[in-house]
Length: 375
Image 1: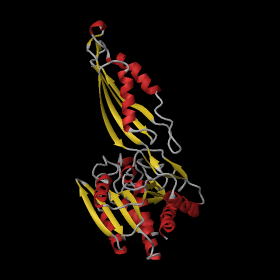
Image 2: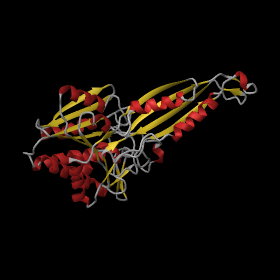
Image 3: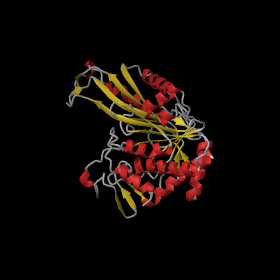
Image 4: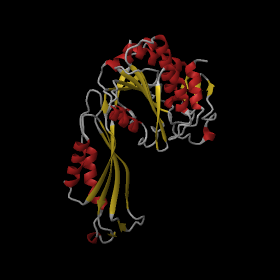
């Protein structure tokens, strides 16, 4: 059995449902400390974070990821225990197999191989690992990044081990992610009897033309790396439950997934302008879940793309699709952040798995990337 497969199975067996780490990071420390890493555990609330660094020179290449996993869902629907790693039909099954314990294992073994083969490599290597990526992400990577910034630690490159591949290992890497911003819009009306509309004010009727304008609005054109910004309503509620009552208010939840072609302030101003143009009374509460980040083509993406080509023969695709990730926090202190990991077709699903044939090539791609950057 390969070292990467063995370590992956060890980590899957630890039931680290967010925000629990369940000893995953302690196991990583056992492996990294003998390689010369200074390992620091940073606790924040229930969340366990690990910052480990070997060397003090620049450039600093950091591997980032999370040991927490999403809940299993109905365990009886799994073909095997989600925390008992199981190999069958050429695949490794278990919660976290794809998202993202295989990536973490591959990173650690790749670093072990690289540092043993090239003890005089240039620069430094780091690990930033959290148990709060699948949860609210308030006590995890963002806390570590804040501390690193306060210390003046300069990160030059960061590879986040998110499962970015689509069909085959290495066919896609993420060089950015869209930002997310939500709004809760409350449109004020006057409740009344539906037979006497002149004595009431229907907020549904007031809001409908404005909502149509928001749906039709073209927020931006996107850019070389991003599709145009998306605005979507997720929930809408008005009424008392009775069919003969005009409601007193209408509440609408909506969300922007936005690119670097737009700003938080600009999007908010435009929404308010559209709403104000319709002349009704409303309140609007905003929540910014994460800012977009983008790493243009450069040293890190080229090093990773070349490693993928050498290992798999594939020409990788740069993409900014998908949800948010901890890359949005790391990008605040690191100029080049790229996400790369195994195929993501089974993540968060019943019977999550990774193909066994992808495990060692993933490790080799991480090692080859270090060779491209640090030799």
